[in-house]
Image: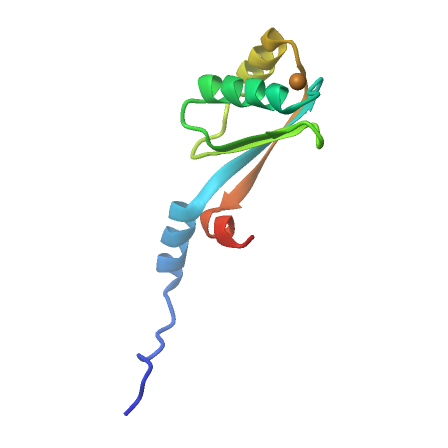
Length: 106
Ligand SMILES: [Cu+2]
């Protein structure tokens, strides 16, 4: 008796469907002016208000950056303006594809 189910190679179509479902966009902002965890909280608030669908919103004053995940690309100018209005400076915004399965790796 065999303990494992037979392995079936996934079709290319299935693989593509899976990539579409699991792919999100990770946006990373370089932010100048954060000095402590209160600043991080301010930035997190601004991001959540500016990008309502944002997940995994996280700012780090030691790294001077903040990041979050979205299904659709976030509006760069809107973010920069909102951060500037809070008293910090958004130096850059970068977006990259992010796979959901990576969340649990570390
Ligand atoms: Cu602070």
